Amino acid sequence: MSNLRSIMKEYADLRDKHKKELEHRKSVLYAKLPRLRDIEESLVKLSIDITKAILNNSQNRQELLEILHKKQMDLKAERVELLLENNYPRDYLELRYQCKNCKDTGYIDGKKCSCLVQREIEELYKQSNMSSSFKRENFDMFRFDLYSNEAENGKISPQENMKDIYRSCINYVKNFDSHDKNLFFIGKPGLGKTFLCNSIAKELLDAGRSVIYQSSPDLIDTIRKYKFDFDKEEENAPYLEELYHCDLLIIDDLGTELSTQFSNLAIYNILNRRLLNNKKIIISTNLNTDELMSTYSERIYSRILGSFSMYKFFGDDIRLKMRTM
Image (cartoon, rainbow, N blue to C red; front, side, top):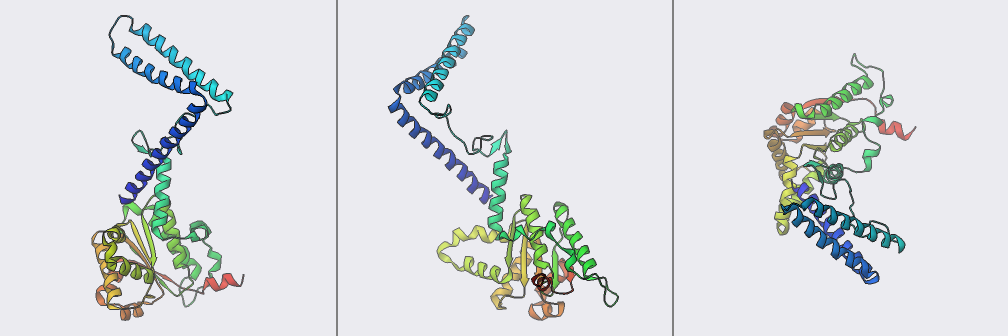
């Protein structure tokens, strides 16, 4: 809601800017072509006369309206002729809009205009902390050929495993509104965990969902900054609320943050509040389950292991493969 209020203020400021620009164009042009001012004043008077005629129940009301409308059309035609004769566009004395469909209101017949939807998506991208990595890290760019198709020790191959995880991620996005699943990506570095996090985030952001994406160290630093910047406590409060209430929170590289009493408490509070409010979370980590249990308190790892669907990534580091290709 705070984002929408901010965006709607932008629309109001934009309309105000257009009005001031129109007034400036009028003042300059009326000084140069005084007849245009006379036409404007006559049109205003005619509009008043037309309104009075509509409210008048006299027998000749229709005849009077036709006369007034003809005068109105003649004046508008004269105005256009004057503008064109002096090398001005015919709409020079009309309000200009960034979006002609909604006239910079953001709505058409009570429904959001496409320009407002796009603006909200842009704001969501900015809020999400996602970077230009979306251009190269999305579902369409995922490469299964980087994973070995050879199975080891009776297990499925890394390639088949990734196809299963990929399909699960596609379904996670496709059915986002009808499930309450949280995802936990676990595996060594360079196996595609962050890539799939980015892919999920992009799809949801493009659908107008609120997503916040942060690495675990950045998340802890952000919470510390916003929580203890007392001079901007009121200003920072909405952002902290977004961490708890956005549609999806993605925590990348859990376990790379400096482990302190504060960081553990911050992670627990986020997990606990979002789980209690049925707000979805995706976590990725390079830790294995034993390392997870030795790094975090029971109340943290029990929530992860008990409330998340775990997906194990295995195989060779695909980033190293890409560097040699």
